[in-house]
Image 1 (cartoon, protein in one colour):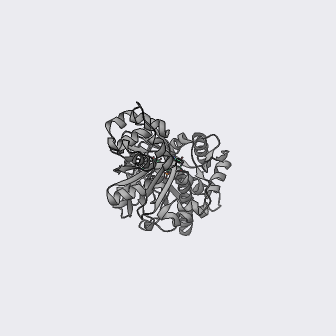
Image 2 (cartoon, protein in one colour):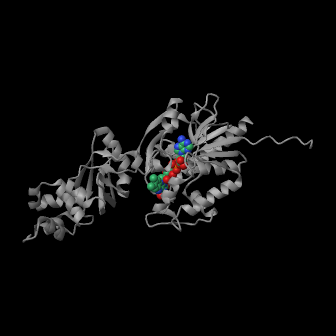
Image 3 (spheres, rainbow, N blue to C red):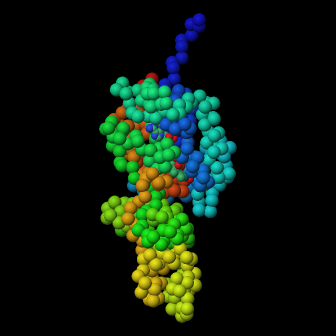
Length: 417
Ligand SMILES: Cc1cc2nc3c(=O)[nH]c(=O)nc-3n(C[C@H](O)[C@H](O)[C@H](O)COP(=O)(O)OP(=O)(O)OC[C@H]3O[C@@H](n4cnc5c(N)ncnc54)[C@H](O)[C@@H]3O)c2cc1C
């Protein structure tokens, strides 16, 4: 028996949710010497991160700050504080330290050179395990026991876990089949935490298409187009990009970029108008001149396509919004090609969206992202109430907030030791 004084046991941190936010919090906390147990409802961690890899894993964006910060809209100031500690350059350096070099694509988006998420995730989880992070999969967190223990449902029944502090990183409610289903919302709300309802972000919208358009053109890309819309403050926006017509309406990267404004308008007014320029770079007068050329024996649709160069999908959209007689009016037709109004009826459900708006309101947390109502419980990632467009801004804020929460937990535990 040694007479040396025994070392105090390391503080125990529980991390609930094994997406990028939970994994990054685990990495930081373990490096600081905490005992880290990471729980996830699914049979493996990082499923949404892996799916993001299907799009090439857009890790972050090369846009300079403060323009970068402005992508977080109403929450840009608190998010900027998180980014001060861990920004796009830090995220790229982090990936490089794991042997994953990144490059800036033509749009300014940043991707791993191999455009894959799986090798990065695999190496990351392995290094966390090697560092001593204990993974507990098939553990669905359902709240707290009366004594404060974390309560999990597992295949073996209910498990209670004692921790000195915890980080919740449960994600939003998009693509619930990947694990983040938003089931935590009523749990936290019942605990007195102020949670903004989860809402679709980076989502498509419903349009009341004719049966003809649905049957003939669902799934067709619409490119290039310029989207014009107004936000809830009446400010006009325009963006050139690509969309896809779907059986229920319209989606795609350009629509996602406008989605937060359009969603808010629909919530306020019941409907929103998205206006499409189907012929970017073509002058209105030239289009009109071309349409005035004799049609001969050609059908109207063929005449429009030949005169304007529009493809079948774009010309089908004209038939959606114009009455038959308008096709004899070259001026009205040309004006509609340059400004085709689409009536958006509703955003698609959050389960179909790329990400969620809403979540734990930042006012419910202190600057370390600790719940004011439950000291020792920190919150990180998409389950916080911020939103951003696609482009790598989502993952960047997940990492940056995870770092704040993990450092907050480390400090809080140190102060209590
Ligand atoms: C198709 C698609 C593509 C995307 N592509 C990109 C991209 O290229 N770039 C980008 O920046 N962003 C992208 N995103 C968004 C990005 O993946 C998310 O913002 C990010 O994964 C959120 O990280 P998170 O750790 O907060 O939550 P999540 O990644 O959602 O992880 C949350 C984890 O918590 C677990 N969990 C949930 N509830 C419980 C519970 N009750 N108990 C235990 N565990 C629970 C889940 O199983 C999950 O593992 C994409 C999203 C989708 C759907």
